[in-house]
Structure formats: C-alpha cells, structure tokens
Length: 374
Ligand code: FES
Ligand SMILES: [Fe+2]
Image (cartoon, rainbow, N blue to C red; front, side, top):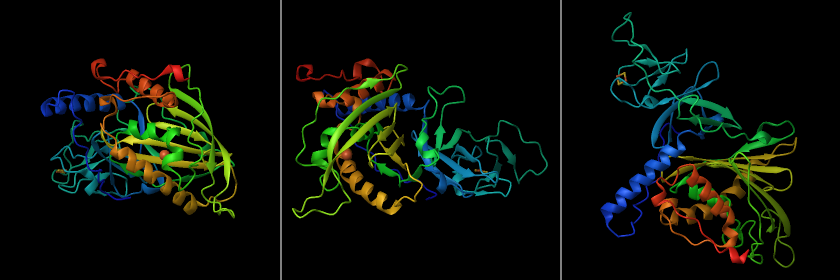
C-alpha cells in the first residue's frame, strides 16, 4: 500500500437553478455537509487487510486523513492522521517494536488508543491524558479493514457482513480497489443498474441483442436496511472463446442484488452459480469514493485471481468513465428522469434521502417515474 493517499481530482461545482455561482457553491457545500454527516455513523472499508502491516499508511475517509498500522499483536489501529503537538501527519512516522506510533517531527509516541505514551524532550515527566490523537473504531472482515468514525455506541447499524467471504468451502479474492472521482451514491447506483449491461459492457458480459429490461420487483427488508432485487439476464460469457459465428456463448445469469444501505452491495451470481461479488464503497469525500470489491466462489480449488481481476478491470473501466462524467456530481442536486426499469435506483435514492443523505427536504429530489408503464 502507498503510504500516501492520493485523492481523485475533485469535482467542480454543481450549478444551481438560478445560475448564480455563489448560490451553487453554497448549495453544494450544504449538500456535501449533509452527505458527510449522514455517512459518518456507518462502517466503511478503508484498506485491504493484506496491505496493512507495521508501516503506517495514510487512508482517507469522509474528507478526513487517517493513519492505520498493524501492531505486534496483529490488531489494526486507526488514528486521525494529525499529531496533537504540531499537526504533522503521523503516517510519516515509524512504529516502535511495542506497536506505538512515533511522530516524524519531535518523535512523540502514541498508542493504538491515541494516548501519548512518550515525549522524548521530557523524559520521566508525567504525560497528561489530554495529549492524545483521535482514535477511531476499526475492524477486519472479508479481507478488508473497516472503520467507523462515529464513537462506539453511536453507529446507526452494524458493519455489513459478507458471510461467504469467511465461510468454509468458499474461496475469496479481494480485488484491487478503485478510486473514482464520483459520489459513492452514484457508484452504487451504477453497480445496481441493469439497464446499461447491453450498452456499456458488450466487450465482456453485455449482450447487445438483449437491451430490454423485463419488469422486476424491489423488496425492502422489514428493518429498512436492505433492498433486494433479482434479475435474469442473457449474458455473454466473457471468457469463453467465440464460436464459428464469431460470437461468444450466451447463457442466462441470475443476478441477486442486495443493497446494504448505505454503500455496500451483495451480488449473487455475478461470476456464475455459487458466486458472490461484494462491493463496499467508501466515501473518501462527499464527491469522491474508493470502491472495494471482494469475490467469493463456492469451491475448494484455488481461484484464478489474475483472470478474475482482468475481467473485472474490463467491466469496471466503462462504468468508471460514465459515472465520473455524470452531472450533477451530487446525486441529490439532480432532477432526473426515471422509467420503470429504474425502479431499484428510485428505491435506493428514496432510502438514502430518508437516512439524511439529501440534506434538507427542500433540496432532496422527489423520485418520480412513470408508473403506467409497469
Ligand atoms: S508535531 Fe508531532 S511530536 Fe511534534
Ligand atoms: Fe456496469
């Protein structure tokens, strides 16, 4: 892992209805503040587990720089990446054999709970407990390191669980994360958008002869945290050789989507029966995101990791290009048109708005679509 997180280039302002740039900036700032506040009480992935070792690494989440490292006991620590002495990023420091993180400027040392445990300039003098870097909740699951920036007990829901990634007789592959210059909500919406398969993905699984989206039903779980949808699609096998007619074979793919609000998706069937693709997208800021993905296959045999990564690279590329081009960047600055096949996106937007991601109702989009077509 790089020790310095390089954020994607930021998006420009979204224009306001009256065309006044000052109003647009104010309205964007309000939307971004609401988005970041709404996202704070959830668990988000910040790194791949296998990339976190005894060298401190900087990651970014919700517009905040964080430093994480693995201590000698194997546990991951996560602090705000800012020394309480003079504000230097702690990620530029080093880790002591006992697991304390030392600042690169005056070499103060901090334990995993953030407390300052050594000030070399004042040996033997007591260290007030108020000298501390801000510590955050951190956890590991499904090959990923997860963080919650809300204090313990203030999470709105538990960390998403990707059971297959930890199950016996399943193998997992943790893919290369992607940094998108796009809002996490737009990325998740794209990941669950079945209407673009036959347009955007014809070099992999997309079937150009099957643009029609058959009606489907969206279920919301009783507790409100999940949106489910099943969809059968006559997809092209992206890895099979072409037949005599030059075409690759087509077979029905049974996709099962389960959105775990706000920014994770469990997708059954993406890599064939007995497969699950799990996507968890971290809002690095209100308008940028880092997409983490993990694939799990029900097998005891080794996974062709390079092949899986290569196919997913091909699938992600056009998605990233399109989503980064969407305007407005901020989903809830948008006034867009919906059709019946956008039903899952409409449900998703409505759920996010309920959770506060749209800010004040005055700036929230009222989802609308033509019910007569369904
Ligand atoms: S700035 Fe970190 S120890 Fe001085
Ligand atoms: Fe796509």
